[in-house]
Image 1 (cartoon, rainbow, N blue to C red):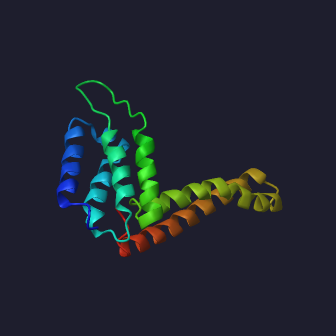
Image 2: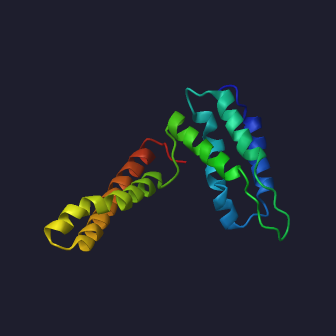
Image 3: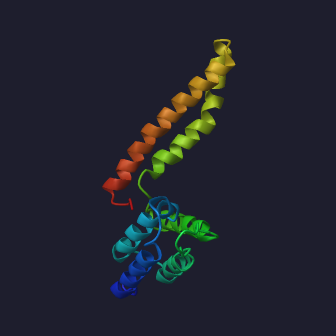
Length: 161
């Protein structure tokens, strides 16, 4: 990326650091603090970028980060939605994912689809409940294993933030 300067990146990193200095570790997790920092560091290495769109999305996220004063809980407002939109954009446009993305994604699909795969097994053994449970467990296990494989593949290709 040629138009996004190191100075702009450094200013954004400092801004994020200043806004979040009073955040608890859980609050930093809620706003994807580590993801934002790693994305900002990774920006100069991105190729085929639509700089204006990426800058606009990053500015939207950073400008809407909630400010915390002592003792008051954060009102996240649209910041969570903006962060998810940024994550979706970077995933679709640059194939960048967060650590463990595929494992979480495929595990949840295993939970949802497993009972439908276990239903025929349950009918065959005359215990539908057990069949659905076995199907859910096996599908979740397959989802986790395949998700770990895809996460390792993404890490090898240096696509993990």
